Amino acid sequence: MGWIATIILGGIAGWLASLVMNRDASMGIFWNIVVGIIGGMIGSGIGNFTGFLTTDAGWFMYLITATIGAVVLLGIANMIQRGRVR
Image 1: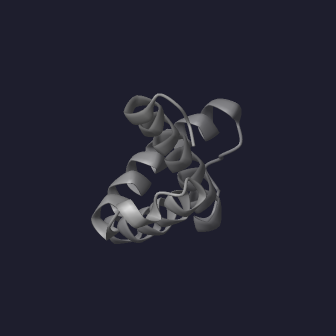
Image 2: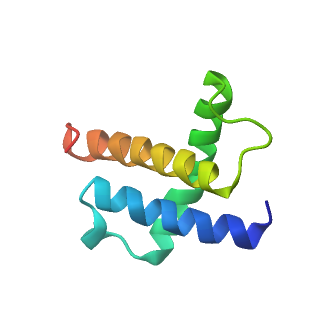
Image 3: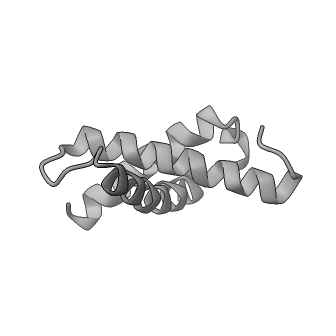
């Protein structure tokens, strides 16, 4: 996937994860993109490890795994900041 598509899918995944974790008001577009891209790496690792993500997966599957990874990342950030997951 190209870097422009990675930024776009990362931004969407970060935004969706911030909605799920109720952090949308505290994050801007830059942090949504950062969280989405890092979440994509986490989600790809989890997906490859479990066999959920294959080499012929489409952009929608990458969006799902990036969103799951971003939710995991925001959950870890909440635990570090507040000592609990919201």
